[in-house]
Length: 216
Image (tube, rainbow, N blue to C red; front, side, top):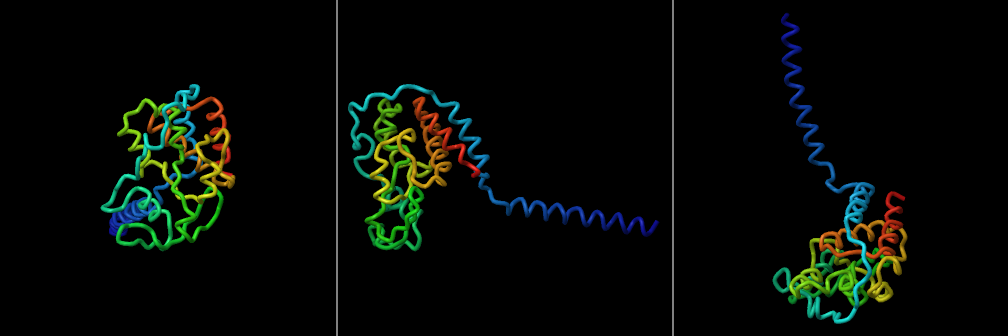
């Protein structure tokens, strides 16, 4: 009887410790979803997007979205915030402008050691967004889109690859690095879904093809 009581007490002591350990492990587990799971979510979001023909480019101007980069943190504008976020060992002057650092361009796999070789790319180009429904937005909404630091719309890339991309959609341009196609498609769909921008039929097919590389 005495031995039974001792075992019962030990059991009561062990269970909470195990529960705490399991809870700690769960808390320590990374919150980032596996790429395959994120890709599945992107497919669901893509299925919810309206498919339509592109609107006219008439009336488009970069200034209709972004007469200048919006300020987010004190003297730092959105571009400077992205450069600091994406770079390594970034040093900035009193005006928040990067004067030193190293940046990686995921589109083409280049390491860039000069801020002059770096661009902050709009994943969904402004001109493309215009033809996807943004032409009907207010100026304030277009400005918010062009300076969005919450969605995956702004990313640091090399100047050369950004010039090659221009205002093209995924049906006519993809990152040279095939290993980035999955992330690129997920980012594109996430942005379009949040802003309720429509996709063209060819654009949707291209995005689905890129999502097939997730998990490669």
